[in-house]
Amino acid sequence: MATCPECDAEIEVDEFDVDKGDQLSCPECGSNLEVVGMAPLELDLAPDDDDEDDVDDDEEKDEDETEDDDEEDDDDEDEVEE
Image (cartoon, rainbow, N blue to C red):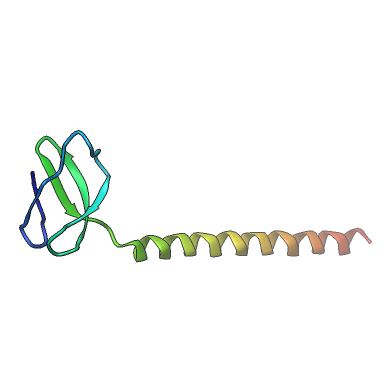
């Protein structure tokens, strides 16, 4: 058994079926929860997916800008060689 940190509902979770970092939802309030401790079984609110998507988007933008810069550098080198 574990307790939902959002609504304090008792959640029946088999300790052998979950690992630290696994996510599940509270059947009472629907909150996304993450297993943060195993002995005793402890749950915490799972991080929002929106935050993670923002970080991923930022990293992709940085990579795209770097590729664009590299292409511009290549163009400059071609002009110098001519």
